[in-house]
Length: 391
Ligand code: NAD
Image: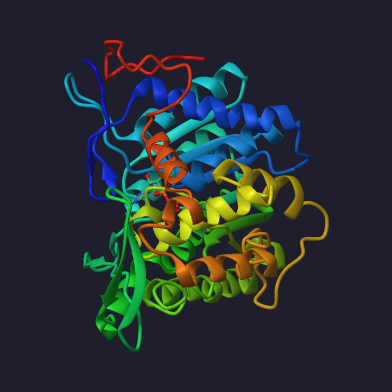
C-alpha cells in the first residue's frame, strides 16, 4: 500500500515503516559518528523505549556504550492493510540494527503499569541480561490503571489554582489565538499525579529488587520537564507539574533505600514528540524555541539531548541542582534564550509567526515522528505495512 500521513488533531494515525526505520538509523548515525561514550552500565532497561526520549536513550546506550537492552512500550502491531504505530516500527528497526551490531535487544510490548508486564520484563531480564545496571523511565501516557485496585486514572493537563489565559497555536492552520483553560480540580490533580507521578517508577524498582535483578550500585533515571516561565502556568505550576514534582519525592525515596546513585530525575529540553504535541501552549513555545536556539547555533532535538545527557552530564561526578536533578535543559533555560523567547512571545501573532518562529520545522519534526518527510525514502512506493526494512 501507499502510506500517507493522516493527521487528526495532534496525532498522526498512520506511520511509514521505511520512514520510521530511516529515522531510527538517523539517530544511530548521530551517536556513532560522535564516538564511544564511556560507561560501565552495560545492561539497561528502558521503560517507554519506542519513541521520543526513551527510544533515544535506548539508541545512545546501545550504540554509544555497547549496552544490551530490554525495552518496554505500548504499541500497535500492523495488519494487512493497516499500518502499525510508529513506535512498533521503531522497535523492530532498533532490534534489527542492535542485533546486527551484536547487541542484545529484547522488547516487551504491553502496559508497563501492569504487574503482568513487569513480570514479563523481569523474565526477559533474567533470560537475556541477568541483572540491570541502569533503568531509564520514559513512559508518557494519558491513562494508568493502578494494579493494586484496578482503578483507571486519566491525567488532565490543566492549570492549578486558577484559570489561565495564554497564546496558543493551531499547528495545522498556523493561527495564533488566545485560549483560556479552566483549572483542574483536586481530583484531576490527584489523577494526573497517579498517571505521571513517581508511583509506577517506585513499583518498578520494588519489583526488580524483589526479583533480584537489580545490580549493586544500579542507577535509574526519570525524565521531567520544568520549562520556561512562558509555559509554567499551564505546565510546571499546573496538574502535570504537580505530577512531575512527585518524581522528586519518588527519587528521594528510592535513594533512601538504594543509595545516592539509585535515582536521578533528569530535566530535559522541550522537543517535538507525540506526548509534547498534546499539551496546550507547548507547541507554540516549541516553534519559537526551535527558531531561537537554531539562530543561536545551539538547537537540539531528542537524540542530541540524550546524547549530551550520557556523553557529558552523566560522566564523572554528576552535577545536580538544588533538588538533586540532572539538568540538560540548561541551554533552553539560559538567560539569553529565555530573554529572546519572552521578547518574541510578547508580540507574537498569526502574521509575524513565520518571521519569529519556525512552524515549518516543527511540522517537519512532527511528521518525522511517524516516518514521513525523511530524505531517501520513496513515499510513492508500494510498501507492505508488516515489513520493516533491515539496515
Ligand atoms: P513519547 O510519547 O515519545 O514516548 C512515550 C513512550 O511511553 C512510548 O515509548 C510509549 O510506547 C510509552 N508508553 C505509553 N504508555 C505506556 C504504557 N502504558 N506502557 C508501556 N509504555 C507506554 O514521549 P516523550 O516526550 O519522549 O516523553 C518521555 C518522558 O520525557 C516523559 O516523562 C516526558 O514528560 C519527558 N519529557 C518530555 C519532553 C518533551 O518535550 N517531549 C521534555 C522533557 C521531559
